[in-house]
Length: 381
Image (cartoon, rainbow, N blue to C red; front, side):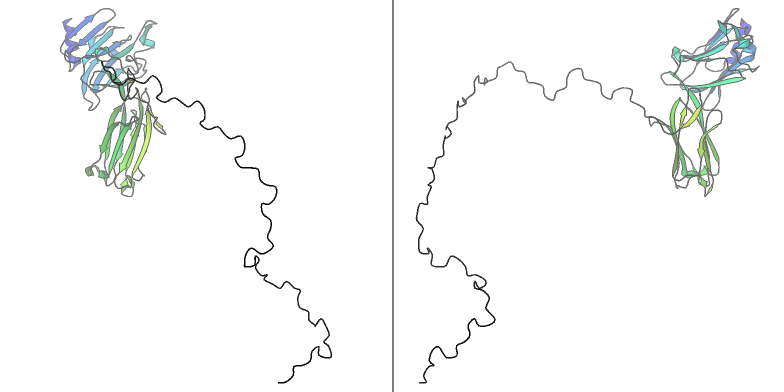
């Protein structure tokens, strides 16, 4: 037992304050505990060749090793189960399992029967479920290694995250370039402002995103992009395998792309970001009806009681009955006065006509003049 304990301590690394080992024909358990931090559990159900299996836990930000184990050095029995309780503070981590023979731990040589096969599990602090599943489990990776990353939040909940790498090759004016990544809630995941010292250099940034929709936007302060007037700058957004999701460089003031991170870590370009509905109503319903004014309550009756009857009785009928016949007498059948024989006015009643009322004058006299005067001429005085 003391020899196995010494071998175990040699590979546990940081974050362990106590260690115990129990062994039987079918299982072995390794535990490291820190009373200040809830543990994250790493469980491996070995196949028939546990000596091929090893794993490594690293800090996702700087790549430093947090803890690692090589089951071959521990002389673990076939089909054994190992468990490590690792105290991890909030942060981002990557865990990678390796198989020296390159066939994973399930299946084939990793399957004893239908009830027992090689596998692994990672369970969050205080047994809290991971997002999208109760745990991260697997085993049939069928290659030399498999890697997964996760984030421990401040409340020690755990979510899967996936690496996204942004490479920016700057032109001669690197200080003009900036970029950001936002989720479809409008929250900024990362924002980077380049500096003049980064001109004509390649700057690589890796961040870890949960599954979901995101936008990548790159800006140029001079509105001439990063290519091609003042150098051949370029940007590239890549997934965890190094495959390019989107890229470019020949733009004006800005350029934007949208992409989807799937639950398996794959990334694909999308045309737009979907709208996110609100999870809960913006206002909780009130338990009682809301009123602008509450009725006033008083122990004393109102000083003026309401009247029981109307103050004025309505009139039973019209005040004046309508007449049954015309109010004037019957009209006379003849004029009341005889016509006058003389004009009633001094002036004529009609205006003179505009033209003569007689016929047009004749061109010749109507009568032949008489040969002798009809009257004697006037005598001289």
